[in-house]
Length: 436
Image (cartoon, one colour):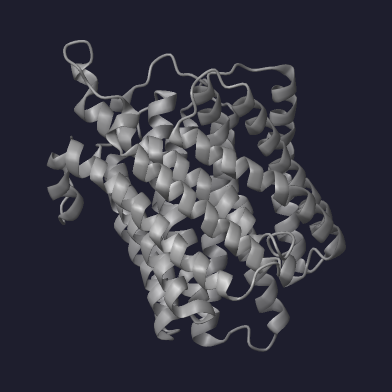
């Protein structure tokens, strides 16, 4: 899997409707999660977390890996049938968890959790078998590690869901708290940010048209080798309550993500192409990670086991999740969804008639608007967490986030409606053809 593949084999991936369904369902989770947070506030916090991080981010990762691991590497996807099955199972499980938290029905949580586990493990097995036949590089290594974290993440989540229903850990709140922090650590720093780092290692060189340098190779090698160990130490230290282990792990995690930010920032600065919507979002994410890194380092040096420092400095949770994760996912989707549609609709017409560019498939004005609104919402959320803004800033951030997500989701859905209307019956129907 080279930085700029010599040949992209779209036939190696699943049918177009498989990843598109993942992305459309994930967008529904995104809008729902922002709406729930805006309407319910802290009461709906757990539901919102699972709608956004599990429903939106994880389903997007599942769709993207299923599509692009075989396409980039030129290795045929292990099973198209499994790729079809994973989405309804994972989506039903994630949705059931959110409903259980919102409705205050703990008995629902283990059932929903078990369904989610089956869906996620189906994805892990299918992509894992595909990766096993692919050439080893930075991106495939990150993705393989992330798949392992997905397994750990779902096991911890299922244990917590069972506790909500049965109270098995009621006798020891300390054990429950450690499991909760470990679950969140593995989810964000393990499954999600490992995937983000791997994707950036592939996408940023491709879309900035910048080659490798010794500086970039050294930083990338450092992050690739040390970051997984750092996540393991941070999560393990929190699980067993060992502050020294968690402290070392936290420092390595911060250094790893700081290295990612530095490499991406340097490539963006030296980009040989005009900045696209994707690169603009990546620039925001880079600034967010660069600001988060030193603050997280200080916080984890002091109290790596405190709940308030779960994601680094107490005032930087939104900076990491909205900026470091959210903007990368949004930027990537602004390329991935139009690219998939373009390949299946226009690629065979290239050279025979005028065809639009990938970026022409979505409305650039709407993209600019949703980017501005989301950035403002994120800035207000960070200011509120830091105590630098009045309480009304939180409400304003929620309203702006909802407007931004609706604009973003609508812009991408429009790509499918306008440029691939033949996919709509399959996307909204109950049957997916196994062949396209």
